Image (cartoon, rainbow, N blue to C red; front, side):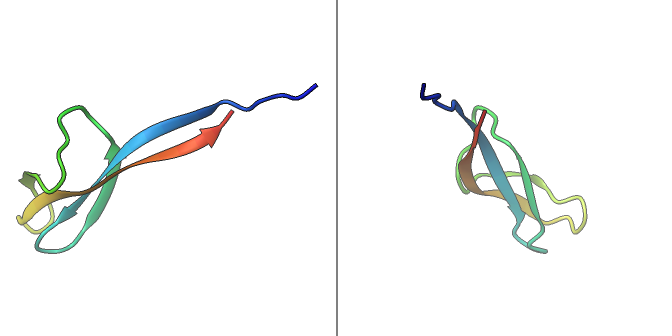
Length: 60
């Protein structure tokens, strides 16, 4: 008997500060748009911008 594995894909958003280039990865939330400036950086007071939205798959 052949068993098929289920795949689950989780979407993530990568944010980067335009000044100090610090990267953070978090789970995608509805309304995330590429290259949108979303907040001020906590370490350098620059602007944090969404750089990438992607999905990672894992098998159960």
